[in-house]
Image (cartoon, rainbow, N blue to C red; front, side, top):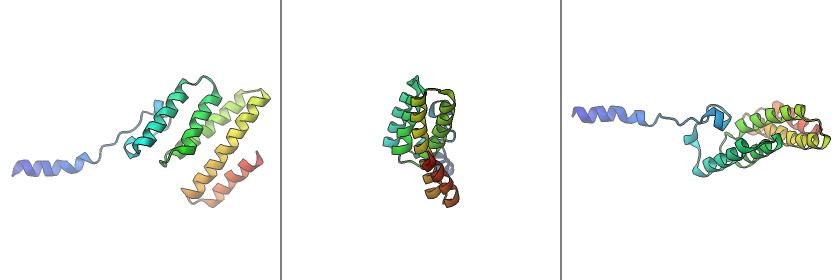
Length: 138
């Protein structure tokens, strides 16, 4: 009887483990990989392989575009904020007008997606409109 009680006591602990993704590879913190569907996990991993192998900022940004646009899991928003910062840094680092314009178009999409995040996930219409207007100005 004691063995059954001990096992019964330990069973609830099994469900509380989390597989948190390595922030250096996954780029964002507190990413519980067990919450992902297999297809989202495979998709994210394939995009991150491209990201980490990329030499140019635009290639990294484009790899994150796919994550932000096509990943179903709510963590897409973490990548959207990460990409937004990456784009702003890249714009400051490039002087070529064609490259800057391409980055500004990526920034426009990023701002729109952040507005979508604040509207749909946070319910903050005022903040969403701020980002939508920034996007429209570009």
